[in-house]
Image (cartoon, rainbow, N blue to C red; front, side):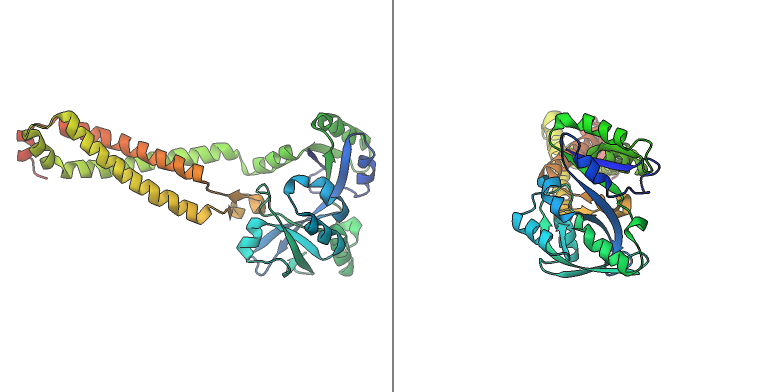
Length: 334
């Protein structure tokens, strides 16, 4: 339901904030806000926070899906120093509601103090840091940067109905065609997909890494299972000599493989859940928009994969051991 409008000549060239007045007069538009993206530093050079400056009075209209509490929106509208942050950002920096936060930008010339008034409970943007655009304009003017020198990076438009999306996109771009700042408008999901495409085909990268890791683990597990079965060679020979059938012995060895896989899967899955269960940033890959969360469902899937890998890696050495007669097994050196 949200649309992003960028400068047609370059995504990072910006657009005049006055365009929002024209956009809001279009049929089917619920609201429009200019957004200025501030890449700021927190306490150290490595603590980068992607902050977003928006118009406070339009925030309830633009972001109803963020689940921001009404009292937080009221504080955001009444306090020009107010800021709202995502749950993961708050947890990583150990912030509390009411804390004063200082961010630095523009080669450390710009220092802005914020008061944290609330949290964004939505899981979609756990690293989101939102503050008032008028406060940013004041802070930049104080160091000699007029608003025209730092225009809105994009214009965010919310439509009233999904049926209006295609028409509003077309009308926005037609409205500013042949103007000083032509626009290119797209849905929010398309804009995020475009951001990810600058990194590469994320899905292919993830699946390729997954396949390489799976094959590597399968080879390591096969070697470990082969050693385990080899150590059981004389035990298997004794059981065969006592009259236990190949099927029974095979089931015992496979059960041991599955037990090893289950123990390893539980330890690995619970460890990953402990580290990433509540979310972790992956800023080194796609900036502060990135997040990694391990859910209980992912842990269950990983446990299933570990059992399958253990089973596949144990079948071949086990079948090879079963084919050896008890007499040959006793004569072999282990």
